Image (cartoon, rainbow, N blue to C red; front, top):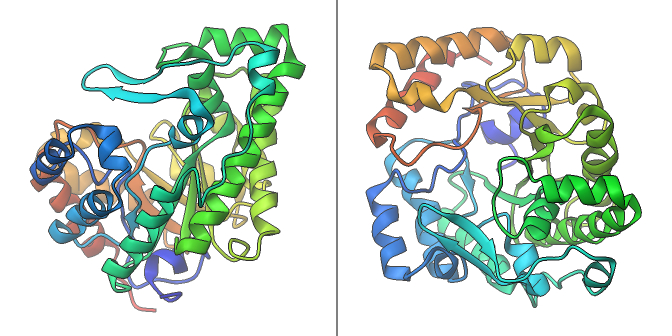
Length: 350
């Protein structure tokens, strides 16, 4: 399995084809996913039932020749395990029954035990690994400390997360206390996923791009680096490649590459060639097709896939992906066309 093209690409080794997987590849655009979610009764129940989480993780692999599976779960499992009470409403998004906004509330938070408080996730990882039969590697993941803190403070999604920013500006010490406990929780959670069988790990810093440069360094980058360093010191995780995806934070690529991660995920607002020029061969790059391309014609999809591949060039260290998650309104046949195009256009001798 260590020679699978996805893992080789993360190690910046030559591959026979550019590996491709898709963020949110197990999701609402697939009718079989919608049927399984209906059986589960709710999104949270789907996440918390290992057999169903396994089922939906494997669904896109039955349709498409993808080069990796990603655990079906949610970034907000950690705050839920801290007692905040997660619910997810259709067309509304995630909500917490309780928020943390004061020193006293934050002081009560502890690091969840992954094998106790989040056992359903570890059981799902173990089950998926067995069911994959080493066909492709399995990616485990978590949300970044800043992104999780945004939801924990706000209690729901937001276009600005102004409450989280205000706490960081008004009481930096309290925000750092919150980010510290969340960072320790994320590191422990990812290490446990590695011990359970995940072969690559990813951190989604979905809202890092909302921060001004100084705030990004203080409240996001600092904790991403802590997580990377913690995993490097963990017996189970030290040899597991870590991908950092900080959406909208293209100004910080060099600093992100210096965290010790194996790869950086990129959104579609930066050229892969420009990004590679900036980070050199320190890390692999993952991305970065605009998800909206999947609504275009077949010819346009192939053309854009070719452009992304050419943008990175004939170098080792590229994992093809979208620049963000696939949207629910995409025709699955469009994704199949993209995956086939990436493999065909990138075929090479090694």
